[in-house]
Amino acid sequence: MIEAKFKITYSHGMHARPATMLVSKATSFESKMILEYNDIRVPLKSIMGVMSLAIPQNINFKITFEGPDEIAAFEAIQRTINEINQLK
Picture 1 (cartoon, rainbow, N blue to C red):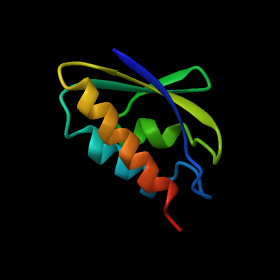
Picture 2 (cartoon, rainbow, N blue to C red):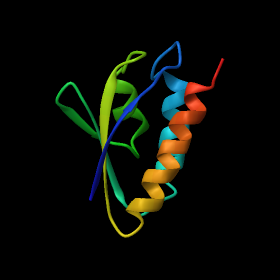
Picture 3 (tube, rainbow, N blue to C red):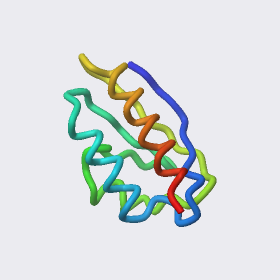
Picture 4 (tube, helix red, strand yellow):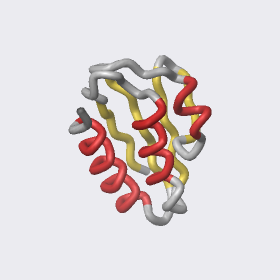
């Protein structure tokens, strides 16, 4: 199991576009991924769950990765968050 903290620095926070990018990447892996923010946990593979958290800009959140491809999933999600933070 891998637990990691992340931050979205994109000016609009976790709205539809970043959430779609994350969920799309997450669904390409077998591992279970849980996004946690403000003591609420949702599956990272659920667009409605991710968007329901409405994570604002520059706020830390945690993602837990567990499964056979958890290392690859962690690395891919980390790259995707870096891409989101480069959005204009």
